[in-house]
Image 1 (cartoon, rainbow, N blue to C red):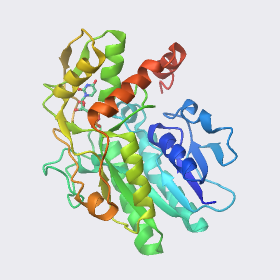
Image 2: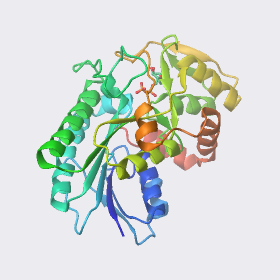
Image 3: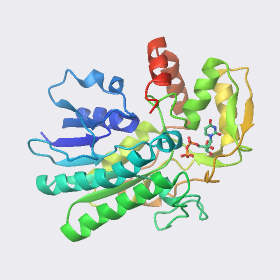
Image 4: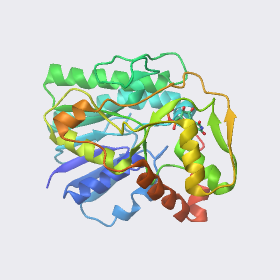
Length: 323
Ligand code: UDP
């Protein structure tokens, strides 16, 4: 049985990865310090012998007994609200955290896949963004703590690959959504759906002309799975190229939820990227991957998930994790 360590395993993406690798017959070790992760996302796996949970901060020395075949580094705050609240931890998990993972991988002779991000492209002036684009990032702006941590993480991973010959994979993740997002993580989708459910107006930042391209979580997980098992060490974009303005996105959520509330405009946050859309030529040709779930299908599943949450869940998601 292959053994895999998933850091950030109790988070939104990490928990979906735990499910996938359990399904594929792996022994899964999830590691999380639960700052932004939630045990609720993985509690359905606790009874399985092939699943373990380590409550640990990956920025501190990592000890995992036994063999490891793969390490997925998905620990990190990932929404602008979160990394503005905990900027130092964000920088540490992208630097000290990946250093610990890479060191562990050398000892175990494991392959490492790191979660990088479209944020490495910053506020891009090339559109859509191919992997060859070096980006337009403000290192000292509010997003710098996340963007630069992720850029450093890529550099560190590539150095272990070239200097130590470690097997490494780098995925650049574009906006992804689905069940288990936190209602209060500040991202546009849970923000809009939460507001619709509470009967509040939907807070559109700026005039809503900025674009994003939203990928459903199952599609993303499939891309990660394929990249991990591939032999390609350079960065690969995984995301859905179906681009939409935030205003149109808000209108879709209003229609989906049937809310009688409207979109209101609030000031645009500093350095908010004006446009974002992945060029997925590489993912198509190297991994034979492309997204399968339309936004209409994915949004319906995600809305049903938020509607199905109990009052307790909603309270916990809205009020805990106030760092
Ligand atoms: N956004 C918005 N209203 C919100 C939250 C976000 O209009 O309540 C906008 C935000 O300014 C950005 C887009 O939606 O242009 C996506 O924001 P998100 O935080 O989800 O992700 P990111 O900016 O990292 O792509």
